[in-house]
Amino acid sequence: MLKKKNGGTILNHLILASSSPRRKELLEQAGFVFQIRTSNVDEEAIQLLNPRKLVESLAVWKGEAVPIQSDEVIVSADTVVSLGNRILTKPKNKAHAMQMLSSLNGRKHDVYTGVMIRSKNIRTVFSVATSVTFWNHSKEDLLRYVESGEPMDKAGGYGIQGMGAFLVKEIVGDYYNVVGLPISSLSRKLKEFDIYPSRFTTINS
Image: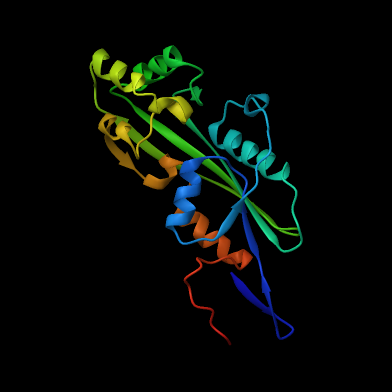
């Protein structure tokens, strides 16, 4: 978080360009101090069949839509679920959520999160993929989950960090990526922008 320049100390301010409560919680748990600054962008305006390119493009669009000051570093992200050649975003209603969960039931799918980190002069874009396999559930169990309301604001119609954990048989890769932010990869890349968790001690060289 602190860097030295010409004998002085400059504080870089971290900005999260997302209204997602899960991304906010993950950054807080990782020890980062940040502000939230979002813009209203139409996520459906970008239509790409390649999930990795889609999430990276959406992350860039979200981050570029937010104003930035010279001492700020902005993080933006987007997450989708990929099943074969289909891309699943957030369900529009309960029927749509049920349709999504039925298509994922008993099958393996991939969760992609694209992230952009940018300062005034530097921009880094990357994405992470995690493989998730569902147990084979009864229609009744899926309906009960849909009626809980949890699926409605989540890519693919489920939240692995909540009640939706019962759906999941196995994951291969970054768990936090499925939640909505690959926090380990992000933390490593934030070091390039002199952004560290708040409790990390500044070392004077």
